[in-house]
Length: 259
Ligand code: MG
Image (cartoon, rainbow, N blue to C red; front, side, top):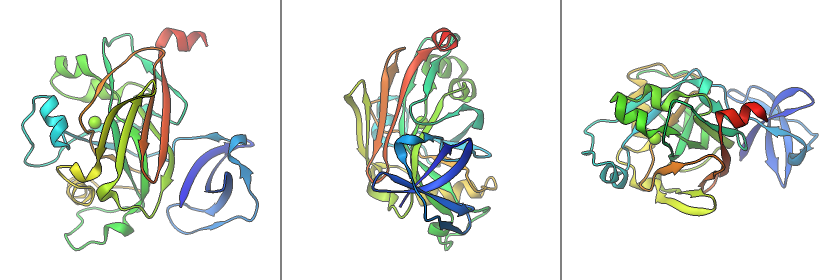
């Protein structure tokens, strides 16, 4: 099922989408929840980012073809980094081009949403119990600053650099989903998640052995080949089979302040 987080009559709700209608959930989406018997047309609500995580863990160079295009050797272990939760925006919100950067890139990615608190998962752990679902993610990166700094924090942490959504798709097999990124409607990235160097379940086990994962935490699993720059006025769509499309536009910081 597809679970949306949305704003309706000043309330933040989770709801399940059925035939264009959102049926709110009563109780915690991370524990047990029941579906209410009333519904709201999806066009009447503001869709919010699917979660408010304690952290977003990114994975660098997790597709062979992207490693090639970046001139990187294949990692022997996952290369992880953090993005701050303050960078999150939802569907149709604007990615702001920072004054400090000269080039910002889209990176379409499959993101995992954690369901329960876990740490140090063993090889036998049932990962399906740990995952609430999957969403689309754009790991926006100031490429010039990433190269200049030699590490990722500044380049990946600007406000608005973590668009995600539009929903949490449960019951998906993450091992062979088609992922596509479009810039102004033109296809720029097209891959299968089967091309990941370290697959989703491996990543969750690996990260849980480093840090405790909490309900709502996001792991974004890396981008395939085809990354490229976005400019003010551009629109970028990340589309993943079984989830849907995450759309955002790019604005210069100054334009957004005027709007
Ligand atoms: Mg990335």
